[in-house]
Image (cartoon, rainbow, N blue to C red; front, side, top):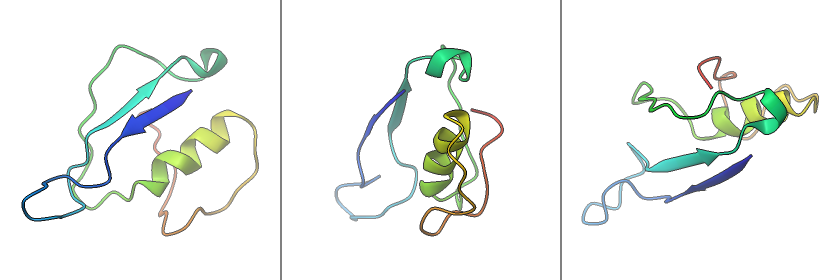
Length: 73
């Protein structure tokens, strides 16, 4: 799995909402590719990182300000 994206959603306002993120790869069959997901506005980016760790069998309760795993991924 490879994550590629930007940390700013709107360069004019320098906000951190609606980030353009690409998750590439299948993660050894743990991730379903070829989809476009739009998550809730208040979803922390660290939820994706927590989900990726879970898919790699790395035990983690939290990553930064995460609020839970993304089951959609």
